[in-house]
Length: 209
Image (cartoon, rainbow, N blue to C red; front, side, top):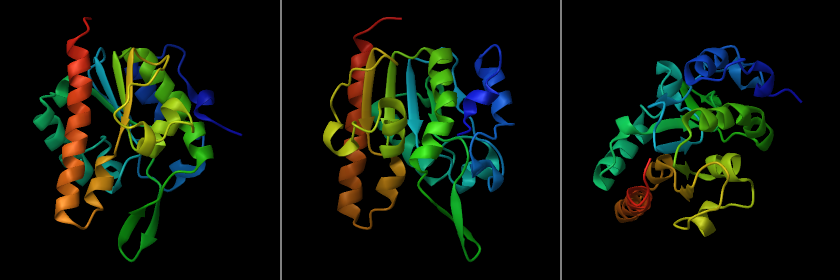
């Protein structure tokens, strides 16, 4: 099976990776996407935030977390005392997977094979940034970073052992909060996301670069 590994640049700097990803044909998702959406942020960020895949707005603008989920993430980061500009933000899958409904493009969850095909990009980003903490947001990111044995429902809030970074954890994806219809439930889940971010921030304060 094809994968992103075939498209890796010789020198995997973030700039070279982002450029090479534009030509990635490692899985069929590129065919229906407007463009690749690579990670964004400080090259030496202490914190890496990993989501699932670009959404409709991200696909159109070419930047991660600039749509409704991104605005909610920004709100949670602000409440947790984390400067997004100091972090590196990316997704496990770099192309938007969707299906049409009228004039809308509805998000579809990437399959396991698509997650695996895109995994070399994420691994290269981790190696290039060398973050001290990696936070997976949602099931797709958790699977890509830590394998299928890690689940958001059972492992959220726990420190994870990972070769990717000294600190590793999982939390809910902001888009999952947006899908909740009940106001109180949304507020509770947002508070939980903020608490998870605060936990990572507190752990980072206990370490030094």
